[in-house]
Length: 58
Image (cartoon, rainbow, N blue to C red; front, side):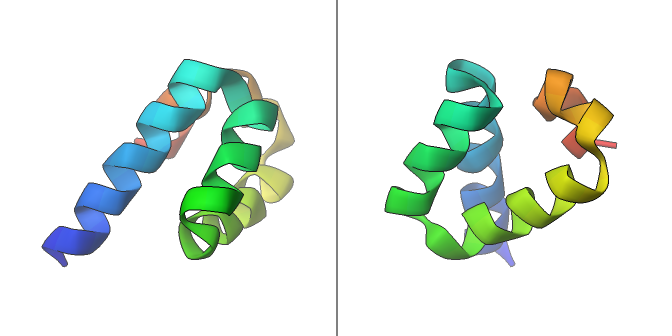
């Protein structure tokens, strides 16, 4: 669980730093499993992609 939390935090940091499009591209290279989870979430909640970190932290 701790490893997953660390990966999740790193992923949200990447999305915040680079934005959704570039952040997902970087995540797909560094952590494809987490990238796929975030991508599914953002596809279901497209309006939330404007502010990825706050919407994913709900």
